[in-house]
Amino acid sequence: MNMKSFKPQNLILGLSLLFTFTFLGYGQQNQRDTSKSLVGFIKKGKLSFHSRTYLMSTLNEGKGNDFFTLANGNIFSYETPIFHGFQIKTGGFLSFRLAEYNLIDSETGQWTKNRYEKALYDIKHPQSKYNLGGLDEVYLSYLHKGISFKLGRQAYKTPLLNKNFNRLRPNLFHGLSAKYQLQKVSISAAWFASEAVRGTMETYAMSNSFGVYGQGRHPSGLNNDYHGYINTHGTGILGFQYEEKNWKTQAWNFWSENVFNLSFLQSDYTLKLNSTKLLFGIQGLYQTALNNGGNNDPTHAYMLKNESTFAIGGQFALEFIQQHKISFNYLGISDQGRYLFPREWGREQFYASQTTELFEGYGGLNAYVLRYEYFSKNKQHTSIISGGVIDQPSIDNLRLNKYGLDNYYHFLIEHKYHFEKYMKGLSLRFIATYKKEIGQGVMTAQQKFNKVDMINLNLVIDYKF
Image (cartoon, rainbow, N blue to C red; front, side, top):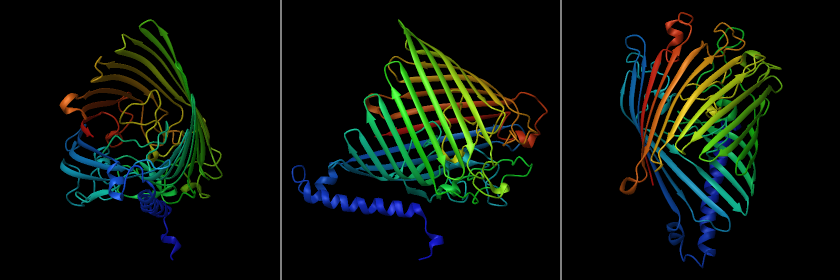
């Protein structure tokens, strides 16, 4: 056996499938009170279907710098009945490129410089249009009282590492997760060895998931070059959540073995005053490099040796008439180092977060976001209008500015509608974002491309049953 070709994810998926057939066969022999055959047992399971049609367009300054695409993705999944606490979930996905404009360079056959549209498909294989399918979640789970386990290919939810399902398919992580629920307290733990990265059709060992989307700039002034050079066996997660009527607290620790350690804390409190609510929230994180940041050669390391940073965020919100919410949101990242967390692992959930941009890769940052949210009484309509000012470190500050982005304004309009009755399960979502450079002339036209002075439009149609 060639050990160089061995992939941990293949072992995990193989074991999951083995458990599937073993378990179903066991269920057929021992489930006498509920079914008399394997077919009867299978029929009592749950079949789910999720179809998403996605229209996206990005408008940049200059001729020939606009992009458009229309895509469709479908996820099928099946869950067996629970048998002695065990359950199997298995699924697959299939997606299609229905229409597009300016996504592929006619001469090279490679992606043009579109940033958002290609993540609907396979960013590594631009010519793939119809062979965009594969496994979705495939895992064995066990539940007994307040204890649960999952082994296999699974979605996972934390404020930083998560499925980030804002395209046609989510991130899926391969490994073992566990959760213990006791009234107001829950404790979570997980170890992931590999990941099916959103926007690709491939599964990467966690060591190779760093830099799949892009690597930015190294503090030395060169382009980063760490993809494929990170030495780690995987990522461990430990979480604690406490929730009561008016108070929620969560704490998470992310341990990327040999690369970095990051601790995250968030606490939210709600004060009710008749029909009005006051909401207070605070977030914080502390991150430090482990050993040499993933590689002994600093040109191939994810973090600099001894690099560390911290961040603090806050929210003050007013909710009234149960339909309106106005919030002021803030995030500040220390200038002692960059906040670094692989974008391939999920979308950060800071109070000040908005669609189409992340805060990862920056230090010495201050973000201020004012947000208004509307909820209809029948819960069919939800709307968001928000605007932010993001104060970045200087574009020439390579130590703190990983992706070469200057200060910018960030605006968002979003509306979502859920159908009911005959069309229940169908929903429409419209998202428009606009980013504008604050200090005109600081960035060149090439540096601004797909980052600022641009509009991103999205229309998403979801149908689930």
